[in-house]
Image (tube, rainbow, N blue to C red; front, side, top):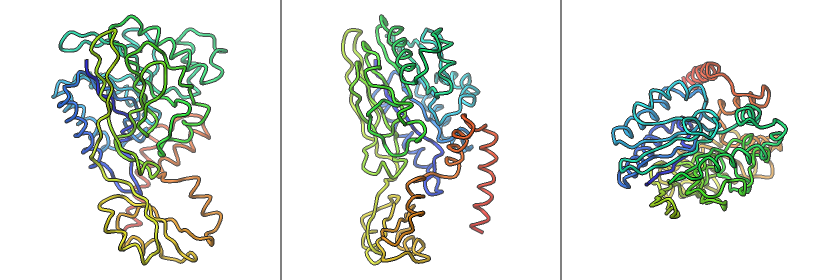
Length: 390
C-alpha cells in the first residue's frame, strides 16, 4: 500500500500583504500530479490546511478544488486539523468531503475504529488502520483525559498527557496489518522551520520523541515547517510545508513523503520527493548602490533586504523597492537604528495583522477568536488597505 504524506499548507497565507493563492494552486497541482504518477492509495494531510481560522473565499476554493480533483482521480485522503485550522469549520464540511472520499478528523477522538482510528481498504483489498490525532491545545487536555477515561491528574503536564494518548494509539493500532499514525504536534528537539506559531512550539507543547509509539509502519507528523526525519520508536517524519512560508525557511528544500508498505511484517520504504512549485524566499544584503546588480540573480523570488546604511533616512524602503520590486521586508543594518525598532523586528517577524490579532486573542482570552470576528477584522483591514492605496 502506498501513501503520500503532506502537511502545513497554510492556504490563505500572505507575505508582505501579497497573495500567494496562485503559488498554493500550483504546488497543490504538483502534489496531485505526484499522487497520480506514484499510484497512491491514500493521501495523508497532517494539519494546518488553512493559514487562518477564518479563511477567505479564495483560500477555501483553492483547497476544496484540490480535494475535488483528488476525488476525480479516485485517490482517498485522510485529513487532521492543525492549530491554525478551525475545528467547527472543518466539521461543517466533513460530511460533504466524504462524497469525494476525503475523511476529516477535526477534533480529538478515542483511539478506536469509527472514531480516532480510520480503517482503510485499498482497491486491491489491503487493510490499513490509520490513527488520527489532531492538534490538542493545552486548555483541551482535560477534555481529552475525559474521553480517554483517565484521571485528570495524569494530564497536569501537556507532554505527560500526550505521552499517554500516543501510547494508547500505539496499543490500538497493534495487530492491524498496516499501521499508520497521523499527528499534529511539536516533537522536542525538532528543527523549526521559521514560520510556526510561537505560542504552540514552546516547551509547554514539546513532546519527547521516545513518547511516540513503536511497532508502527510510519508516523506522519505535522506542525513543524522544516521537512525532517525524527528519531523515534517507529519511522517518523515531518513532511514540512510545501511552500517556504516565512523568511526563516529560505534555504529549505520543500517536499512530500512517499511511504510504501508491502506487508504487515515488512518495514516501510520511505522516500522524499522534492517540490518545485512556488516562488523562493531570499535574503539580500548590500548598500543601495549594490542592489541593482544583486537584482539580476534574484529571479521572481520574494526578498528580505538587509540594507547597509550609515544612518536611517526617510524613504529608504521606497528606494529599495524601486530597484527590487519583490522586496517584502527592508531592514536597515546600522548601529544608528533605534533600539525600539530592533526590538519590534524581533517580536513580530513576518506576521500579518490577522496573525498578530489571533496571537493576542489566544494569550488574552485563552482560546481561538470566533470565525465571525476574524471575518469582520479581515473586511475592515481590506477596506483600510484600499483607502491607503487610493
